[in-house]
Amino acid sequence: MRALSRKTKLRTVRNSDDVKRTAVVAGGAGFLGSHLCRKLLDLDYRVVCVDSFLTGQQRNISPLLRNHNFTLINSDIVDALPVEVHVDQVFNLACAASPPKYQEHPIHTMQTCVTGTHNLLRLAETNDARFLQASTSEVYGDPHVHPQPETYRGNVNPFGPRACYDEGKRAAEALCYDFKESLGVNVKVARIFNTYGPRMLADDGRVVSNFIVQALKGEPITIFGSGQQTRSFCYVDDLVEGLIRLMNSDETVAEPVNLGNPTEFTIVELAELVLQQTGSKSKMVKRKLPVDDPKQRRPDISRAEELLNWQPRVSLAQGLQSTIDYFAKQLGQTEAKRLEIA
Ligand code: UDP
Image (cartoon, rainbow, N blue to C red; front, top):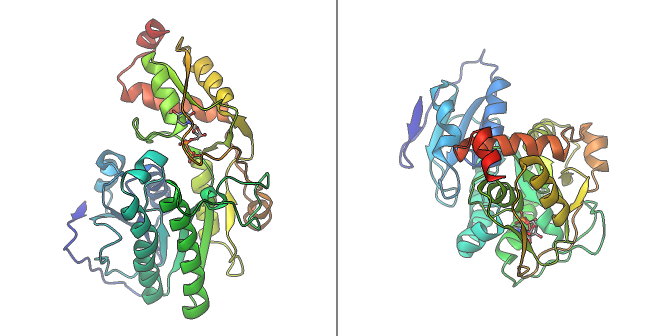
């Protein structure tokens, strides 16, 4: 186990017969990042996880600290990066992704997207490593084109409360392509649509975790606005598989690639499914719709299908069940207690 403070420099010597790949996962203690770290270790990578623990959780990666191929660096990517190992791949997943969380520290969100991405791109450049940017469906804003193909340029409010994230992620994409054009860095850009699964934070603020936790506690299910707005929910295992395929894709795969599940649901439909699967008797209550909340979202995944031979496999019903089981355990609920609430 190695857990390093931000000041610690990490050095390893690379033997010429060493065939293991080393990946840096920035944001590796977060929801998505921790699933990616585990998968990469299973695939026999060495993993250097960089996390500031702003939204990342120690418990997401605690079991990995026993693995001698896993290193944790407690650092913010906005600061200088104390990574001095040879690196083959850099995954940039470091940024709060839930609207209430990224809006809590908007200036830091923008700095993470721009300065943080710049620092990681420099790391990739000096190591001649591949770089994967976790971009987002938010680059399409409140889309007028539906479903959203990668060629759609979006409808983003540049000064609304979501701008720190939406515009930050758009700037980060631009920076990736500047590094590719000017310095020859092999960049990959994944536009990630709503993803859910075990190890989301219970108070994360996103719709899937909110609804499941509310249902399990027997509290009202908070529907923002009419609940007729749509999202398309991708299970985390499918998403991680897409990220790894994209990172290892052919050099010619350079354009952004949508990764998400194209099956679309209204928010009320999601609430109904959660109620049905938890057996909860919670009631739906209406709350104010957040400013600039996109009305519809569904990925066109033809590019991922064609270039990566990738498609999501887990249905919302299946993925919700694993996520419900996870939160029930987190909340210390047995099946019996859940039935009492219901
Ligand atoms: N939402 C909701 N109730 C909640 C949380 C979110 O109705 O308790 C809605 C939100 O207004 C949005 C959708 O669910 O229309 C997805 O929200 P989320 O924050 O998960 O992600 P977004 O796709 O907006 O980034």
